[in-house]
Length: 196
Image 1 (cartoon, rainbow, N blue to C red):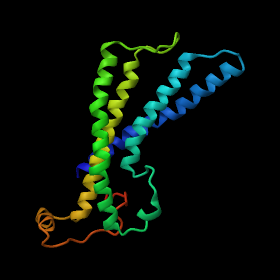
Image 2: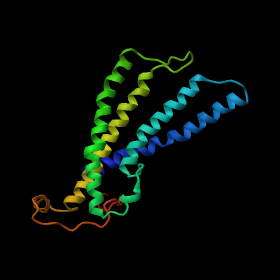
Image 3: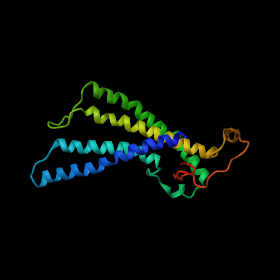
């Protein structure tokens, strides 16, 4: 299934990128020691910190979508039956998440291209060069989120029409002729589950 392939790639990228948080802690600790022990600050280190935050969050958001770990108000959602949860997820992805992600990508590309073409640098005197490099993570991060949302949508749709169905059963289910057996929990992410 294509969702397993995409999830595997995004999962590996997410695991590799998670190391950025450890490096970030080291940079922050170094900056604090410089500032409070040696009474010296570094604009470059401050910019490195927010660049690392940006990269971590942009990549981390796609990881959260893949693993269904994003923020959600579960007051009602958790009480719904699995089928309704699947429909809510599908409609939320199609009507809210995907249009938002595409809208941001549509506007991010010229934003990053302008930065690259002008060879944008930090406005701070000792700031980092190549501002376009960090801005490019807007495109990378949102492209990864689009892939993650697509992957999630394929899992949800597979559940709605009948998980592990033959092509004939899928066609029949889509035509409303029959309904195939489905797992109990549409949010299960284990390898044998509905969204595995």
